[in-house]
Length: 198
Image (cartoon, rainbow, N blue to C red):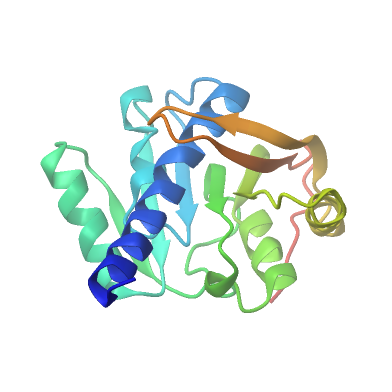
């Protein structure tokens, strides 16, 4: 395969990952009107922007790569959507505790140096009753699929979140290309007990 086709394939894969993930999340979470939403490891921001039509109170994208944040800002401007961005690693998020109603993240291994610490940081950002949703590509091997899902359930529980949903085999097909995802959603208890990892 020519190098240009390989590069094009990688670019499409990144775009497709962000685009497809929104379908499963919206189907599971429901409307987010009035919510403060943070997309961690947002890439070009397609997942975050998939919430724009639901009129969130605040829409924030975080990524360690400044070029991804620039792409996110450009895409938001093209759609006339007001967004905030922050350059940060997933393990050191630059927001106070209890800043968001919903934190979402499309899990891509190279964006997470320490997944357990990243989950702790994302949980820390949640307001009481807030939800953390992590979604990832599903392996075609049953044992790998069960392992990934169980790992993420454990990570959310270790921060004090109550797991609301843990599902594998979530199909997406909005663009006509079938993709299967796993999804884990946790909620921060209303009683407080803010998880910390600092």
